[in-house]
Image 1: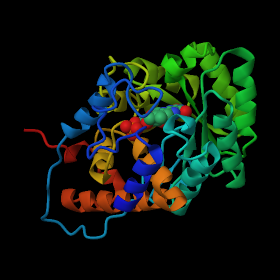
Image 2: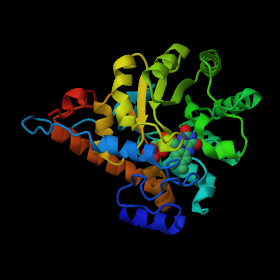
Image 3: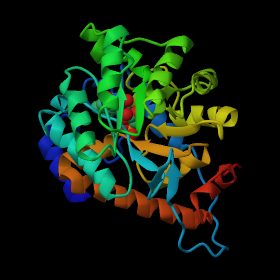
Length: 339
Ligand SMILES: Cc1cc2nc3c(=O)[nH]c(=O)nc-3n(C[C@H](O)[C@H](O)[C@H](O)COP(=O)(O)O)c2cc1C
């Protein structure tokens, strides 16, 4: 991983400083770029909220070969981790083309027994590269589209479904993206009625639906009511609303309200296998990784991404041993340390 990170640093020419701890301090306000919006507080909150969680260390047990594999939305995965959707490589000093980036993410995740998500935005090369990569991977990828308005939304939905994907997502929190606002592009919140219509369109094509950008119990209940198969507790990596709490802070209440009725993904600030475990213990069924995947893809392509996933899996398994969890189901709230 060190070689991969060094290469990424060289290729990104300052667009990301590859700090020892990726917590949004140095890149505060760098949107576009790798940072968090404004003061960068929401990005920092994600990392700080996870750091504040500690786990019960248990060693008197017989768990030596924990099983990290899970089935999620009908997919068999080697561990409950996926690559979060990230787009806009042109913001990283052309470190990689959009096509090469999504190929690395989709291919690297697949090689690691996982699945990669792809993003959307302006210019259209972001979504078209993702869709092409997913098509070429026989539908093994999850395209995320933005909450566009009117005809543009339906066109993008059609395009995404045509990729052959089995699961499709919408990052509803992109309504707060400064990059799109600056370009005068029509994205916005969706009413329950409109969200239900979108989800029905997707599901009638035999495709499962993920709603990304849920930070409250109210929105989680509405996602469930609208018929989503999965929601993502996410603040877009701190890029849309600086006043947002850390994801790990918002997750437990959401899990308490809807766990078991809808699948729960969480992303934001996850940097290692112990962080993955913490999100699971706080109530997630599956965990998304953003910036570390981008760095791995830029520094090492497909192999970089699969190397990162191998590292995360080894760290997750080690955490499972140290908490006495033989499988992912056991990674529940009883593993959280409470003084
Ligand atoms: C540069 C960049 C671009 C992103 N583009 C998208 C996107 O197109 N669609 C989307 O749903 N999320 C996008 N995200 C948010 C990520 O999917 C994810 O929520 C976030 O990066 C998770 O936080 P982490 O990077 O701390 O792991 C982007 C994030 C970054 C840093």
